[in-house]
Length: 290
Ligand code: G4P
Image (cartoon, rainbow, N blue to C red; front, side, top):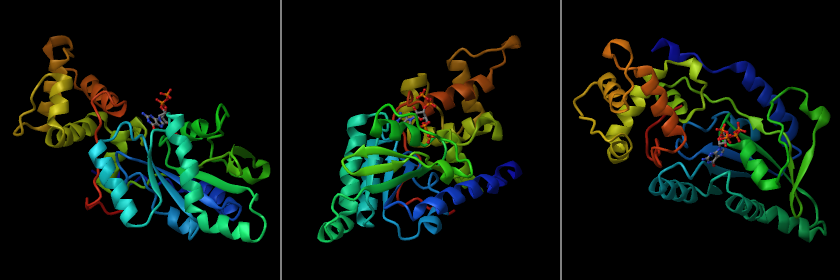
């Protein structure tokens, strides 16, 4: 397991830290994107320290890929905690536009105060943050139209900071803050790998696919059966399940051996793209500790 315990990438996080620290005082609100399939693992625990008491809207992205029953539970969970949260399919402009209402609702006190002071037209400035691949650029593009978003988290961004006009009196910082995922906990690392937030060359693809297959055969057996037309017996070892999957797809190499690497890549691709169905990996009461 040694190889899964090293990835905290302090260099990347330093750049993001600088970006957020340089800009946090300029914005009225932070939009944090997390992945609705893994809302615990896709958060970055350092963000709280960086943005402190700044108002925040939490968007659970890729809600078209996560289990709708789990989505309801997550929204209730955040509502109970008084956190402004919303499920979003970042590709859906109509859904994304509703975020503007949530931003105004979250900033109701500030907007009222500005109105009292006679500055109700003052621009509301926001910034978007989230781990790589969570949907930041897609979200911003859906929110503001065909604007080309800068996705790099390069240092010195304050030199050429630009604001994109969103709607009414809301402006958005054009450079999203890329938070590096924290995956020194094995389960968090696995979940981030399943959803594709960790590059495939960081880990062993077959190992990750076996773990995913194990989770799916326990939690979503019907979806697996529907997609691959086979039943995965509980008593089988994960590697045997991967072989079954490869066999079911006719992934055979010379000598009749099963191409388990191809089977692993197929499973991961089909899970990540939603072809397997809507699947959530984490529920509000799950005991996953950073
Ligand atoms: P980032 O800026 O946070 O790094 O993420 P980005 O917007 O680039 O999105 C990463 C991938 O996730 C893209 O897919 C994007 O289309 C997809 N995506 C983003 N938000 C959603 C969502 O809410 N639902 C679904 N189903 N997919 C989403 P890609 O395969 O890298 O590119 P492409 O398919 O758009 O060509």
